[in-house]
Length: 210
Image 1 (cartoon, rainbow, N blue to C red):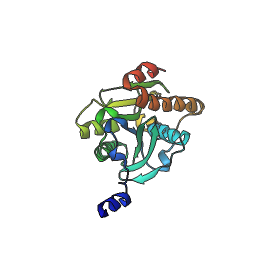
Image 2 (image 1 turned 135 degrees about the vertical axis):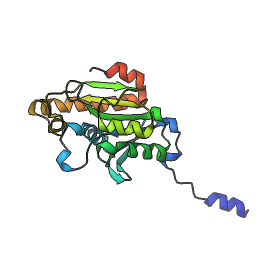
Image 3 (image 1 turned 60 degrees about the vertical axis):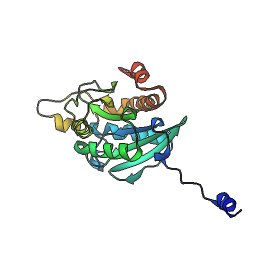
Image 4 (image 1 turned 120 degrees about the vertical axis):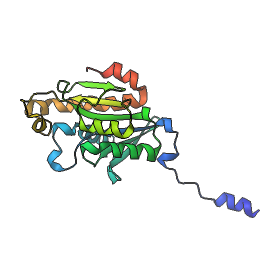
């Protein structure tokens, strides 16, 4: 009798993100640099896309270990959005920590970053590749010990003179780009949902070059 009473009043275990099916969990990482001085720079497009996605879905950011995070559920899947606070060239540490903390498989990770080699606003989703000289991707590759992770490159073009690359990527968008950004960012948010719901191959077929 007492054991039955104990069973009735036994509290339910606390539900945590880590208790879910790992294959239904996704880590979406936007790369950028922390600080208001970088907020509207080309190099911070990863942050900007995640901020827009969070806003569209009424999500609230919280500061946690190695970055700002928020979660979103969509059709039985859980997304952990991460904006590392380690600065761009140390992004790998945050990615690895949250992968391990939440037991998220490598194939369910999507890294969002800027790309000088693509025209402004061009979307390019890939399952593997080199770092392309990008310090954030370079660190992620070194920490994860692989180049085979999903990445979403957002084109920022290479409209700068010789020796001006750093000033360009850390510079703010010009007026024409500012006018076009809302539509491009909205399309980028669609890429996130497609990656989670339709898979990486369908997402590449549907959005690359768009």
